[in-house]
Image (cartoon, rainbow, N blue to C red; front, top):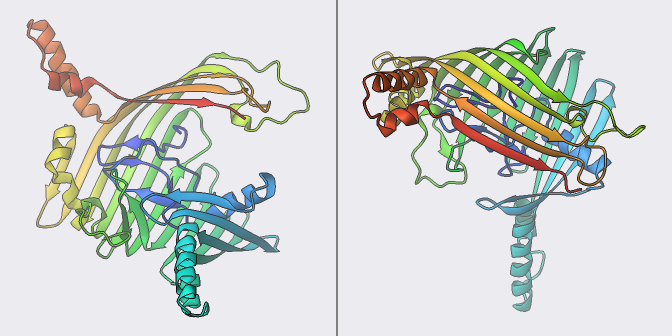
Length: 400
């Protein structure tokens, strides 16, 4: 999670990869900047929904993969057809069956049949509501450059995305366009941005040492609540405008204990990265800066956000320009038992992470605490909150 700077925080929002979401066929959504989702499941930018489904079909004997969305269509079943047209070109077909809508349609047809209404009436409309289709293609322009084009709900023609990935020796470049771009806020409300463009440059290949990440994000059009619920306020970060973001960090990992022996011979671990029992510590220190131009710059003057951080801020309302800069730090403790080779109880993993999201706020609180201690004053609760880091604890246990 820490390796590719997925969770960088600047109090304007965590720098996350796409999070898994059952709301659409695409299966992903972007967190709204300013609304971090620390419990969201993130995935790499080149692991598409089709590749996930194809893996389930081929290696886990799951021809239909279920998903459930309490706020959307309920239970859905997914299937993907992956066709290799050439050694560097593949074509995919996605199918989604809305189980809840199917049950409703069958009940309606049975009721109409008792009343003498033929089954063929409105059959096309019901199929249109129950089944969603998507298509996609991936073309390897060069061994290091890939073009991905996907269209979802083609029977309605309302969603699509195009992505270009280019791999450099020490960096990855990603150019993406989504129409519309799907975002989710901390209340779990989904938002559609009519057109979302992004350019991303990130360093890769170093588990320790210097890392950096650059991002350009352009949103166009007025955001709309996905599903038609207009009772929520539109997040300011999704308003039209251009945002540039840069982060740099230094990471250091230390193994207090690691055991590479006693593995089962001729047995492949389920995950090579989880095959060594160990106890380790990881620390990250870095800085982040962002600049916004357009209506989206208004997010920097939200009173609640200004109270959460003591960082450098600049806002020009007339020019619709805002800038932000701050420090951050993170410390992670991880302990693992088991080699993840056996079918049962061969992996127990505990992880705890302490995040200092705003280094300026932490330094201000630490300075006040030092002054209170020196002058024998009783510190207030707000000062203690300034120096207390965010804590995220996770537990993984293999059952089968």
